[in-house]
Length: 268
Image (cartoon, rainbow, N blue to C red; front, side, top):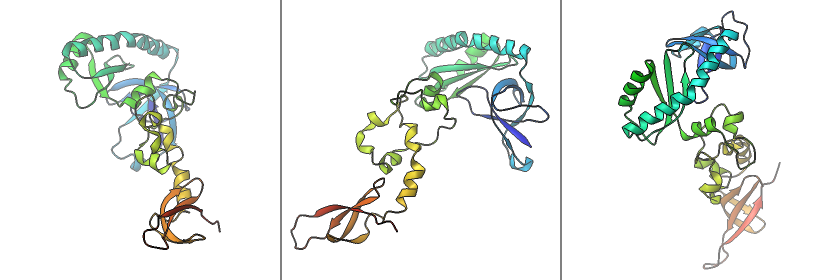
């Protein structure tokens, strides 16, 4: 069974839909039937999946590739977004909620609005939903996203001088932890130089993880006893890219100052 991954909004999760008999390709805008109604989105990928492996994932179905009439509706929905977001922010301010609305998505069938927001923690937004429902006379959904998703939506220029990866090509914002900075021996540069526009660790730290993992296989674990031309000692650190280790040489006499040398790993 062919399954397409559909993106309804830049900050929303991808939705899975059966392709069926529709002639569709990656990048096409399509009209999709979901459990909540009919929506329009862009095809991100298409892959073959055995029916029994779809599990409990919500699966919709593609009705058609968007035609001229559909595009008229999509364009009209897009024009509404700014006013919808502005009113949503007005309600949030009125209620004094600690959250920030960063975008909205009107469904193709006109039955619901989804608001994307960022917040430091959990927010009781039930009163906001009531107010928005009363005003718009539609089903209202509030979807919390992270600050990295906000950067992906608003966009900017990274320190490399190029458009942010999350906005240009990075579809999945993987886990980026301080362990990656330590592995690449750049943790000493400080959080300001290692953080992106979003304030979190830069996604590009994850690009070289596989290379560092592979190179690390050649290096002896820290604490290993080794023999060098300077004498026997213990591995106390790595230089992964240089393929060398720091070895603390055993002192010849008690009280001698420890000698630390950098030793390259011999290639077989």
